[in-house]
Image 1 (cartoon, chains in turn cyan, red):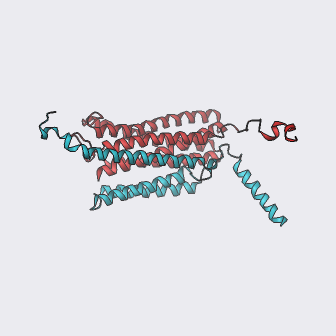
Image 2 (cartoon, rainbow over the protein chains, first blue to last red):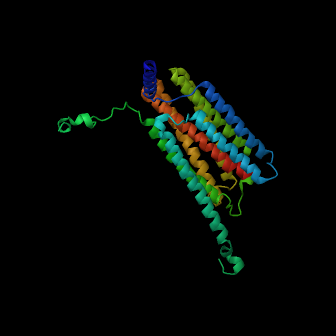
Length: 138
Length: 204
């Protein structure tokens, strides 16, 4: 029993030391040669494939080509986040991750909202905009 | 009443928390990057809305050269990993190595800018400047803003190299290097969005 408690104390102390790690004043993970090279190789692959597909003329279906290209981009952004920006749920007690999640939510609303609203407006404006055909002058 | 006689310091923390200098720099800089990200989101939304309005002018297929874009992507990706090596050299207290990798990063950053300026000049020469159509206005606003970020990143890089040369890898310089690292990798992430949504999807 006593030994378990002692072990628990030791773990707590270690965690404490990690959190207040003083050997780097910024207290951040800077990765290793291995993690940077992994990220780099993955990025090269994820960049080369969409470029090759589009340069070769793409698939028969435009939608499929676009979906593959966008999919690769999303995966590559995640690769950069993990291997280059060293994102994790621990740094700054999770606040960097919270800020990121908040930003992504706003980003999706701004992008999806703008495209949706403007696409609908364009579609609905079309007949009225055709002044010349209606003989309304310009 | 026992509690009334207690000194206020026992219950409330009267002393402010002591944080060592720069403890909140990385989270603060991250928040700045997120706000920058929202700015780019707006520019991407503008491009998404106006990207098809050619005003009877040239479209992406008439203008873009994918080989040039691939070259630029390679420059930026290489600069990302060389910056990573600069950070690793910094962790090992290797001042010369840090400066060398930062110098290589700067070269790739400047090459990226040179290719982009060439591309813009070529487009304007063809009569496809930002005033030609809504598509081109949105294109120049988005890609130009990214290029401007890279240009300021290069300026920051030069400043840091001078500071490291003069003062060495002191804590303040390490903090600055970590901030620029986030900025530089962030710009690479934005570039993924640019080459995907502007160039590749435009050329399909």
